[in-house]
Length: 256
Image (tube, rainbow, N blue to C red):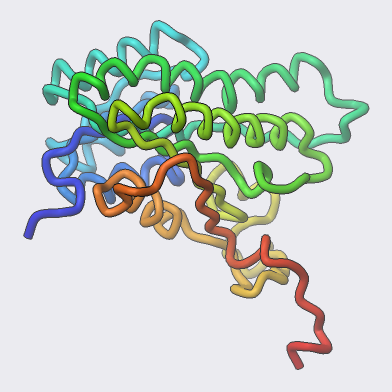
């Protein structure tokens, strides 16, 4: 049976591990050919090799305009076109606002906000040549609400949410849809130092309606929907995958 992405070509940033790698595996399983972009070359090459002939790895520093142009060119040269861009790469830094250095703040903004901007800018001409497509920006629950200790991270994710809407307005007439995904706590190498994992000796208590950490494959399934033609009437929107955290607060007396 044909998959949801049969015949499509996708470029995913931050795809060497974590959510990006899971998205790449799922996309390939659903019929896509995938370019995995990352700065973790050894891990990226290994992930692409594990996926097989439908995947290739491309070094991609998302803060580099030249790297983005090279990644898009590689997709077209190898697979003939580009239909899907997933801006997945991101970094996380925590600390009080008053002690966050300008250098650290700018680093997060460059990766999490400027990186996707450069990605969209580089990919749009190729998406136009392909007759349209889908852009999925991986924001965060921190792009829907504040997060104490995460001034740079939250700022970058709110900005990505806004950029998604602007891009959707500008690109809709070209058949290019643009949406943002907002994960809550998901177990990845980036979040494990925060105790967001399933290790029984380290796992923290979750008070979300679905009282556990999210899995990368659960985010990947939502990204797949947005990348595919099944979401053909969705653009400029936010899609939350957070175990119900954004729904509000649960009081113990109501759940007894």
